[in-house]
Image 1: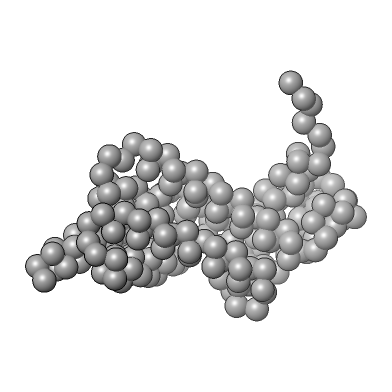
Image 2: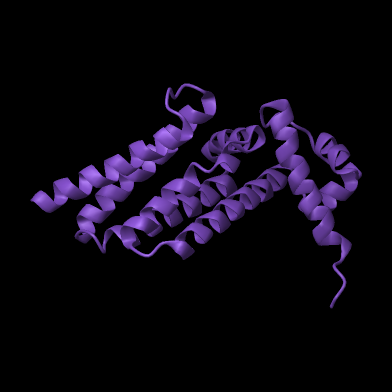
Amino acid sequence: MPKLGMEPIRRKALIEATISEIGQRGSLDVTVGQIARRAGMSSGLAHHYFGSKDQMLLAAMRHIMTEFARRTCRGLATARTPRERLDAIIAASFDAREFRPEVVLSWLSFYVQAHHNPGARRLLRVYTGRLHSNLVFNLRQLTDPPRAHRIANGIAALIDGLYIRQALGTNPLDRFQTMELVRDYVDRMLEKESAH
């Protein structure tokens, strides 16, 4: 078996340090030096692997999104119907690991970063595009394409809005009640569409 080189190990350490440092500081107001210290290496080495703080932040969000995608895929693997697959996507979106303080702060900071950083904006488009595509794929098996897109837009808006409210502690519902609210929306929209 080939020996794992130091580069992937150090990159992973820097990514994890970036997420932890954002969680500790509560914002993107972190320095490469702080991240490097947390990872146990020099600023020069951190710059060597990522080039800039923005690149570290993007790598951290890619890592968070990859973990989210893995959880989603695990849920989809056990789902048997389009409706169960929609539930799996909703469940992954409100998984307890998505609500760890450092992950919440990374997401909220990422949305701010996407407003002015083209790389972050592209990554956000990839994330929202995949979510929409997964939702539409399953909804099209339950309704016609235009309605599938409309319902998918509503589900995505609910997921994003309720996640932010849950993360900020302004949602009076717990995580499970929140998932049920999104599922109720899906059921009502599918019933409404089938009645036409």
